[in-house]
Image (cartoon, rainbow, N blue to C red; front, side, top):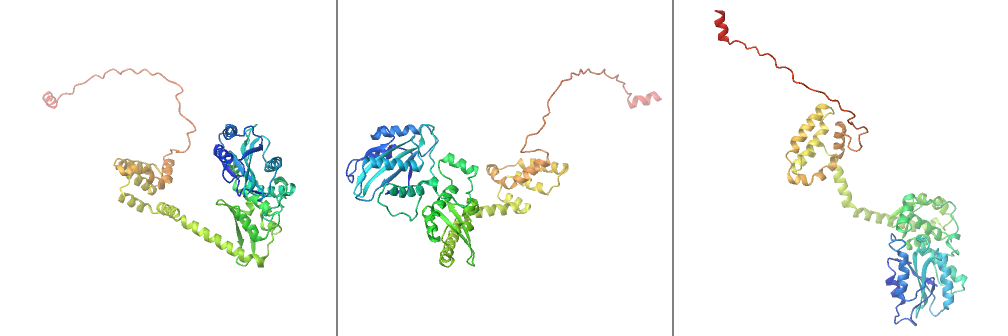
Length: 429
């Protein structure tokens, strides 16, 4: 029995349900609902029933869960047998009885199979089904179901899986727990964080002590890249692991994934595996070089900005004047050459007022760009002027009382006329 290559999650139930219940020429009989915990069986009414769960969690963007279970060609199960197998499968996958689901039977030349459509939103509390690396776990559950229900054993990945995820063999050392941000991201998106995905995959693939090459290829099939840390002398120091562009050292995942612990969990032989590991390491390096080349534009821009900020102030002033930029910025730059003090502050204030009175239209338009290199200068100036830009004053001056003062005019002074010079001369005679 096989499941889909990848379990699907979707946004709407209507389209999927219409497709699953629509007859097609390759079907030996029309598809129909054989089980689950739904009440309706026709497409429109069944879609409406599933859509009621979406009302419980409007924040969940993908409430639809879809997988299939397919028998080898020529084999059949009765409806009752299919329902029993499907119920057991969903229970082992971690769905509760109050997660709405339906089983739709299809029968064609490729083999009899059922489609399972379920809501990830639990009916009673609105709790969201997150799943725990569900593609890997689904594979091992299906293989165990083949044993438990005496079904034809289909070729798998060569791993002997346990009956349920909770009974998987634990790692020698505890795994590193998720950070607070990772836990919040899982709750917000409904998806497992990269660290958990890698840890779950490692536990599954290390269960049967694979060879080094099998271990790397199995992880790669799940979009997890194993990056070997191997010295030029041939000494192997362990792996780091990358998923979706996010890399983790073994110490970030848990002590059970360090090289000293992994050597007992994988079949590593230096003479046999080192050539493969050296080749793998070189391919990772080439990929990293390519990624670095793609980031050249961003890096160059950063270097240009750094070089611009670190240039001498005189050169900055000349560049600004040549470009016709706002002279107010030039006044800010000149402040770097002034010693702190009242005289420097007055000189800077005077210069700034003079230069700011002659702005051009283009300079005003791009003023926010040219202030970026001088943010530290502006903050320093504010500090020198004792104007804290980033915190409120602790004390405020308030008027606590009023005093009335009566002001009266003083009596006019007696005017004494001074005789004219000619008059003084006649009097003396």
